[in-house]
Length: 185
Image (cartoon, rainbow, N blue to C red; front, side, top):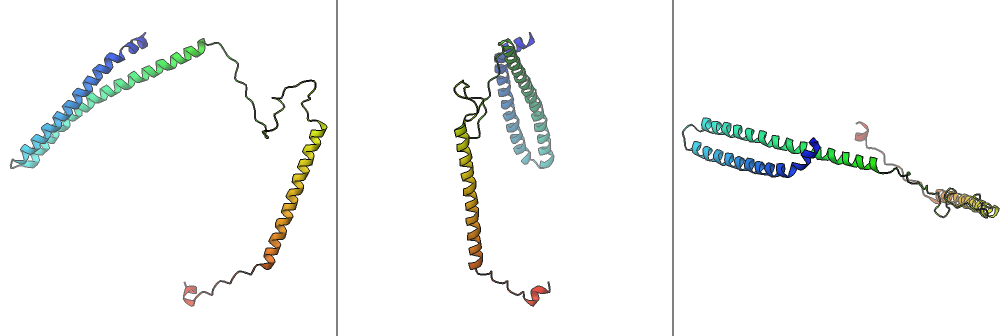
């Protein structure tokens, strides 16, 4: 019941809060202008420091009061927004509870290869067995054997190339001898 009343109140409260914020802003400007005028008046006197200090104290007191009023408005606004959020959450929970239960969505896992569909997602029929045929199995084994041979061939070529480079490469130049002054350090 209280949440329903809070739901009806925001339009009036917001208009009232906006007017109150405008009043506070106007009073702040008024306090600042009064302070500036008082400081100008103090500068025309012989004892400036105590007069300016008194003007600062009056300004601080007035601004503190306005800040407290602003904090009260901000706190009320935060509470109102929290109540609205709570109401939305309760409405969503109520809607979810009233909705009939649906089965969870089906998760389809991706296969390692995009061209081969996983066995779980392939249609199973009497003509097509879920296991690969002998021809498919032989083709896979041949492709695997070909890749192994190509990798071994590539490895041998790299080793031969590195050996040729090691033989034909000039040795690195020796480092210069350090000066006697550098050794003493």
